[in-house]
Image (cartoon, rainbow, N blue to C red; front, side):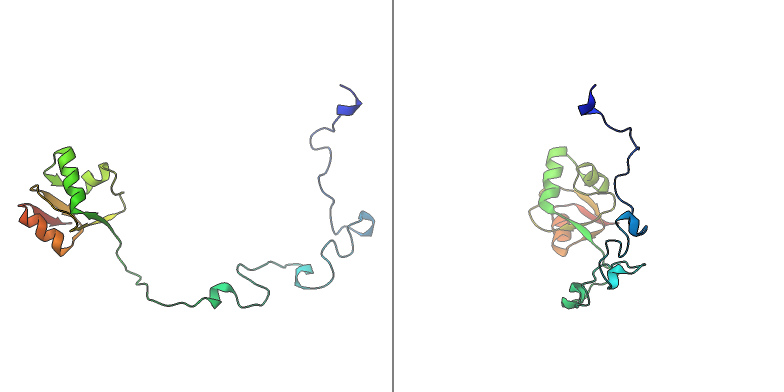
Length: 148
């Protein structure tokens, strides 16, 4: 240990100068806030999206369309995916539990079966919704489509 590597104890020195504590402190007067204006006043807080009086972006951008409040979102799964799943796992019944274990959906998803691809296996499929073509293809293959 020598004089070149001495350091004060932790917490013994203050990191920044206190502002607004009189002229003698060197940071009195306007207290680093400049002269006048909104930002120099006490209680000032910048509002989210405020652009200095200019029309804010969220009010300038045109809004259009309609977003229904009670829209039901489905996780779409095609017939080709069901056929592939049935072939690899040798299944005759496919429900949400099977799809969950396969990693195709999560617990919060509602499932809709769509008609892309061909179905050759006789399957009992349980889902929340079916497209007309998917339901027809399942019945044609000799299976059943059960709505939850």
